[in-house]
Image (cartoon, rainbow, N blue to C red; front, side, top):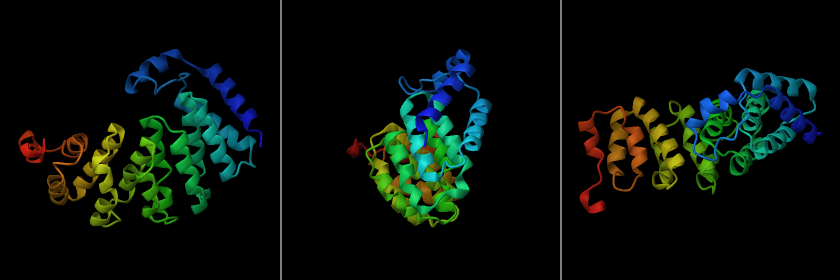
Length: 241
């Protein structure tokens, strides 16, 4: 498989299409070091993804996952976005054996919230929504060294919030309540807020139970729809501070 040729093609394409003003516009949404970009329009990245798929019909899922990891390790933001679009286009080809390749992608490649959440919202959940694997296969993700891998677990669970028993979801993700990485806390807070829309009383009771140990960012995100007075309930006890 001509991986390097495909990589060089993408580099040349992006250098031809780059717009510095796009970099200036979007860099403010990322922390320093998380956004090294050419400045490419989404439509142009989508066109390149389609072209690669057409030019390389022999690109099976195992080879595609290897290529996508190379795109991520390249470092430029649009290379990661290109990887995500390629994977999203091939969801119908996913098999249980490919799941480990996605974990490797997170462990070694994903370095920012946008790429992580693109995969978690549009691609990765197919493994659990289409019953390719049980959601418990994300256990190793919860225990992973990469903060982006850990973040992916609760964010992917959002897609099964209506089809999986609430106690199961809460028990499964509970270890992440005390995660020290802010990006993981934000993902957990997002997940809890989504559950709150369906089970407000249960989630509020759960957060109250964990108010002294859960990361404050999680509670802040999960309770942002409550009034200021209602949020006072979730303050830490003075003895726990």
